[in-house]
Amino acid sequence: MSSHDEKSRITNSLATTVVHAGLDKAQQGRAFSQGPAFASTFHLSGEVENGHHQYARFHNPTWDSLEQALAELEEGASLVFPSGMAAGAAVMTSFVESGDTIMLQSDGYYATRAYAEAFLSKFGVTIKAVPTLELINQDYSTVKLVFVESPSNPLLDVIDIAALAEKAHASGCLLAIDNTTLTPLGQQPLKLGADISMCSDTKALNGHSDVVFGHVATKNQELYEAMLLWRKLSGNIPGPMETWLVHRGLATLDMRLERMTNNAQILAEWLEQHPKVKMTRYPGLNNDPSHRLATQQMSHFGFIISFDLGNKKNADQFLANSKLIFEATSFGGVHTMAERRARWGTDQVSEGLIRLSVGCENVEDLKQDLSQALELVSS
Image 1: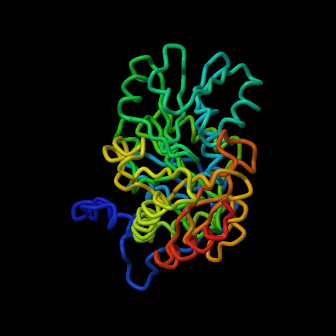
Image 2: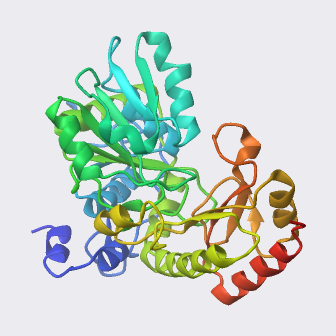
């Protein structure tokens, strides 16, 4: 019996699994986790056999450990990539052919849509983009792949993954879920019926704003082999140091998410009542449009809050006067971060919309900082 099998018999929660995931059986005098394997090639004599490490574009022992860890969390075979976009590109590129149609969100993560429109369309792939809340009503009879982010970024709309999977599969369509905002600890796309779960591990899964990374997971062996081959031949491979850092960050994911999501719930309820906030979106709010579905398929409501201050001037004043909040374009780190999303010109949102990624600070300190920054907003 393997070490993983032995642990799985006594592990009843992801909170425990995430601490032990991907680690070898304890050995006398050895570290709990072996360091990164820095190698471009490996000793390989005689005939090539499956399972041997051969060349670093094909395999790396450090990848193996993290991929095993992610497989334990996702409950599907996993592959690691050097960024979330590399993982997303593998999903959209490795098994889609000329003449196929991919359906994406018009109000989801912009770079996913931009990649498909800028590159895949050149090779005869049709890209169809529709709003998140209209995805469930679409005709999938001519669609090869639907790739959905739920909750959507930045407005946090939630799609019924199980219902979408059933409808897509009835038409022979594949469903991939971008699970970045929740991670496998917040939502289990494969259990809900998705064919592929994808995550930008740059964000909360690593959680320390120091690594760019991504992964995919699937129970479908054919899809797994296609994405594995794409990674091998395209060279979209992560470095061993980055891989090791993500595995190290993974161990604290449950603890970080507990603090971050608890903070987010408190702050969302507070922001909803603030007179200078025009609108607050957070799936944990009882009156949020996403609340019912989020309660059904998510194990927490996430750490992202979007709120509207009405215009660019107000949003800029808020960000300039915040003391604890880093103005940055990423999310999911231990530090609280925020940005005015309209500054990129890629999201169809209000000029005053703030995306707030709530971190691990003391919630009363964060509330005090939000309060003083909002007091300095002119209107």
